[in-house]
Each structure stands twice: as C-alpha cells, then as structure tokens.
Amino acid sequence: MRIRLLSIAILSAAACFVFAQEQSKINLPQDKGPDKIDVSGYPAELQSAYKLFTSKCSKCHTIARPINTKMQRPEWERYVKRMMHKPNSGISDKQGKEIFDFLVYDQTNRKDKNPNAFFPALSDDEIAKLKAK
Image 1 (cartoon, helix red, strand yellow):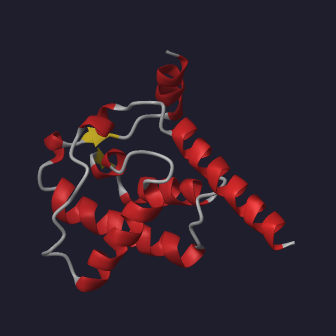
Image 2 (cartoon, one colour):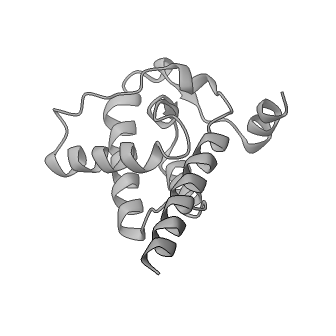
Image 3 (spheres, helix red, strand yellow):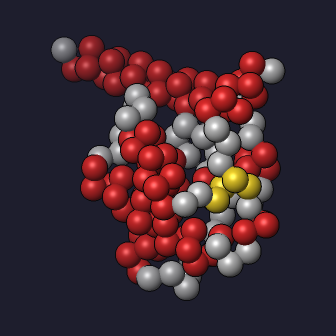
C-alpha cells in the first residue's frame, strides 16, 4: 500500500511538472524582462507575499511575465482568480488574496511610476495567436 501511494505521488508530481512545462512553452514579450524585484523597501507582509507569488506563479509560467506586465486593479483581480482556478495551481483563496495584494501594491508603487518600462497585458486572442505560431 505504501509503495502504491509513493508511486501515485511520484506520478502526480511528474504530471504537474509536465503541465507546467506545457504552459510555459509560449513566450510573451514580458518573459524576456527581469525575473526579480527588489522588494526590500516593501512592507514586511508584502515581502512575504512576494515569496508566495514567486513560488506559486512560477509553476505555470515565467515569473518575469507578471513582473513585467502592467494592469489595472480589476485586471489583476481577474487574472489572479483565473490563475487560481487553473489545474494544479495550488493557490488557496487566502493565498490568492495575498498574491493579489502584492500585485496591486507593486503596480501602484513600481510600475505606475514608470509605465513605459512595462508591457500591457495581452488579450486572450493575442495569446492564442502566439500559441498558434
């Protein structure tokens, strides 16, 4: 029984890895930007949320993607909810709120100060066209 459970766990982990690799095959312009943020000046709870954000969001796509994308608050809310419902995201409601709070703070305090340095979010149609290539 124990060996069977271990086998199931290994196969599940492998499936998650393959799923993440499949999701990340598409390269968006945002993926080519920086993949880290200096959050040392952010409030402590948002520094903690940054760690959660990088851990959870890098499962399915580059962390550079959201770091280099600018969105308004309602767009970030929609985006985070959408990501929470992806298979194997492992993002709970509480974690989704923390990630959302981080993204909104970062948008307001970093991206909005230099909007030309960041990419606008792509529409679903634009992403579909990139996937088709």
